[in-house]
Image (cartoon, rainbow, N blue to C red; front, side):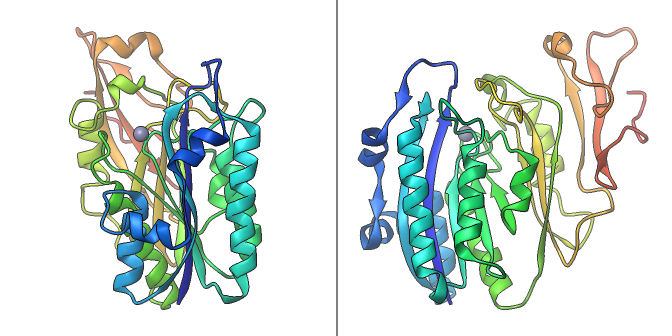
Length: 312
Ligand SMILES: [Zn+2]
C-alpha cells in the first residue's frame, strides 16, 4: 500500500490588501523525507496522516506540506507553484500509488480565485487517476463549495475550535483511506451547505451555539450504522466568497445518505437576530415573549427541512 501525503493551508482574510507570497509558504514548507521526520509525532494533520499510514504498514510518498495559518490572499504565483508541485508529485508517482491524503484549509483565496482549494483538489484528483481514493482533511473554518464533494472520495474536518484535534483529523482520514484500500468499506461523501455564517469569535466549540451543535452531531453516536464520520464546518466570515458559511459532511459506507444525516437544536441569542438567514432552507422562529430564537437544523433526504421543528 503506497499513499502520497501533502498539504497546502492558508486561511485567507480576503479583505486584507496584502498577499501571502511564495517566500511565506516556503518558510513553513516541508518536503520529502524531512516532511515525514518533522511531522511524525506532531499534533498536526500531517502527523495524523503518518500515524494512520504507519500503523497500517503503508509506504508513505511525501510531497510538500506548508501551513501558513491565517493571513491575506495567497498570491496566485504561490498557489500555482504549490498546486503544480503537489499534483506533479502525485502524477509522477501515480503508477505506484494506491491513494492520496491532502490537508487543505478550505478558506484559501487568491486575488483571482475564490476557491483555490477546490481547484487544487480537482487537479490532484486528475493527477491520481481513476479508481484511486483521494481523501482530504480540512479546517473547521473552511468555506467549502459543494463541488468539492465531486473531487474527493471523503473529507474530514476538525471537530473543535480551538483546533485541538488536528492530528486526530488526519488520523480519521488516514484510517478511512486504509480501510478503503483494504476493501473493508466503500465510502460515499455527502456535503451540504447551510446558509449561515458566524463571525470567528463565535466559533469556539466550547461555547454556544457551537457547543450544542458539536455535542449533537460529531460527538453523538451516529443514528445510522452506515455513518462512518461526520464533520461540521462553520466557515470563515472574513472572506468575500460565494460559498461562505456552514457546511456538513457525512462519510457513509456503501451509498449516499438518504435518511436524516444530522440534526441538532440551535438556540441562538438575540445578537443573531439581525443576521437571520434564508428561511427557505433554515428553519427557525422567535420564541413567544422572548428575544431568543429556537430552531432545528435537520437534513432529510439531502435537504434541510423544518418539518420536525418544535415550537420551542
Ligand atoms: Zn480554523
